[in-house]
Image (cartoon, rainbow, N blue to C red; front, side):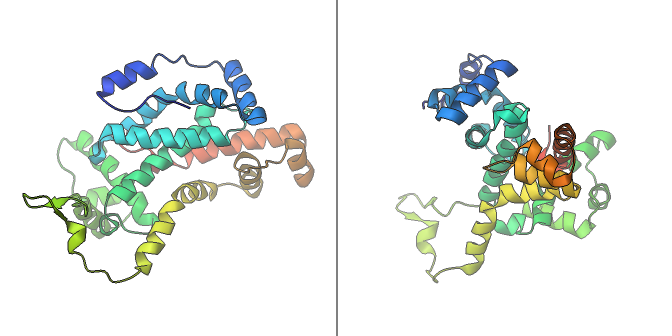
Length: 281
């Protein structure tokens, strides 16, 4: 599978991916069925390239975090590929509606890995504040035409002013790469000067947490669902071997159509429950 590379100017990349036509719902369904039934890589490629423009749009929302847009697009593309692999066309929604969760999660994971753990923190609450802070500051600046105070930001986010001040300080500078060369000769890196102290259990734990970022994001969204809604999302939308609507109906003693309605309702709730995944526009 050969996909357009995010190299050269961004304008050239956007021009290239815009050559790929958008798929109609009917076309997307037929192609996705080919992929699911026969593991057709040509079908997978068509699904991916027809949605690359959406990755650019989503990545653009994260442009104010100080990273190259091309890098954000590349990470988003990986999320799109993952979504295509897991997409089930029989569930009745478009690929991009499902893929947007994975695209955002992969971009977020890249942002978190690229900033120091000291700056972002390791808890889910700290990570939420990291993504919310920049958005809140921009919104308040737009309203008041001046730089907002920490107390004002804290009130808008429902957190303590000290937490906002701490995170703002953490985000004030970027890390120096440990692999960056030191001096004019360029034969020594920062990492060469670090003493080896064996395995760092704290960093190992943080790395493990980062790998589960996608699951954490989705779990956060599931917390606001009813028992039936949560069951349907977990065992039908997210499962590798999803239950049928009839099986779900039998479990909860409801009709197949009612199970479908609950599934649709649950998907809407999950999307509404993830506002912190959409940073500044």
